Image (tube, rainbow, N blue to C red):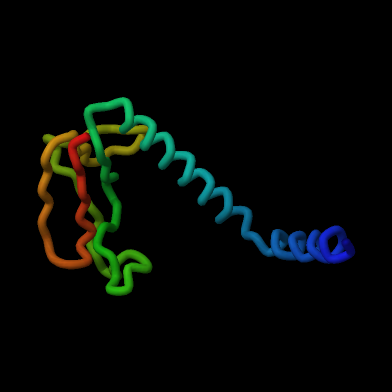
Length: 111
């Protein structure tokens, strides 16, 4: 009882006190925007979206973006705007994107 009611709450409070609120709010805003984009995709003719400025190539252990990689820029003929972001919309159907390993390719399948 003591551990559950006294020790655990103190440890949780100490853990939370170390949070960087700026980073936490930025992460929350990112998740919120991602969910808005996913909701938009569900009700559209598109199955995927790649925002302009995204860093698609991953490093070899896939833990983050490849250092020095060029930001993604959508071809104008497939560019769409979703939730205030511009980028490439990929419509449902068969889409093939090729490149080398760790290049950040997207898979899109017809439903």
